[in-house]
Length: 389
Ligand code: GLU
Image (cartoon, rainbow, N blue to C red; front, side):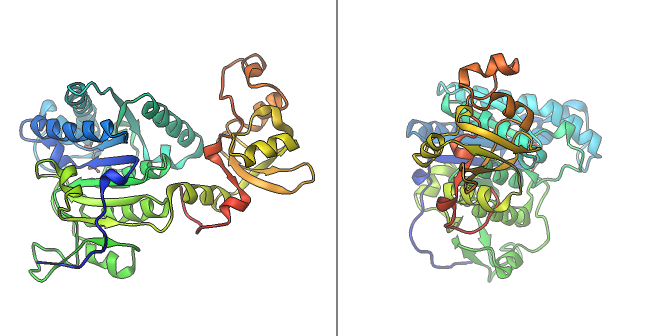
């Protein structure tokens, strides 16, 4: 095996918001129906270090099925979907509990978040999931995410969590996604088969040649193989998030990455913030418009959120989470944003102070009509390529 030359040394520690995905083979001892507690305790030490350094850490953890199946007396080997879902239901409790115990030693609170891929694709739920995870991070917790396997309507495939982790990273504007797996990164060919395989330390674009290196074979039961990892890399990179694949079997796998250990980095050309702004401005169909008074436009330009008080007219049949055009009084479009209220409620609260929302709607919604993170001023979004979130 040889290693292709790489440029600069990249470090996890340079990230601010880090999503770490852990594969089933690392998390679970399937034959015992248990989480690999010692391994997780070591990882928890590393997570605690990142948190102490001021980083937001989000875990995407597989292993529910692998941990759970034994407890239901399910035999080794392939399971039909309903048995996988049953296994996940009993394994997920153990998984969540193991994280809670491992991180409690560092006084870190764990929060379980079960998502379906739809939650990250469908706009309304997406806004809620993003807000919830943001709030958990602000409050210092470590969200531990898995797919909500019991309600999944499609076949649960190993490797789905690579994609889920990339979508989560995109959704919460993470700058770094780590895939901890049983392989140390990308090779030009399968290193177990081809002794001439060269290790690739750095990728800046998923070209056809790069995709070709993954092959089609899925190596092993609990690994989605390289194919799903490259799909994840594409999702992450187009959201301006760098991704790194590293071998999680070694001690202190995260520190090993920063110490220059073998790992493949996928590096985007854009930042998460500008990729997201560009996605909002250029990739979504606007379902309506909000017209603002001049004061509100000034506030948006100085980086503030849009409050209901600044809205003077509303057009269109949009729902919460849809993209809307944001117009000046003369009809000029100044921004695009994801709106926090559907059109009927938005009409009821426009022109009003945020503290009046509860009286007007009968529930306490969000204070803002469009949050500044969900807003792209058009001059600002003019830079950068059209991408997904
Ligand atoms: N959600 C599955 C589990 O926790 C794993 C899916 C995957 O490995 O990608 O067992």
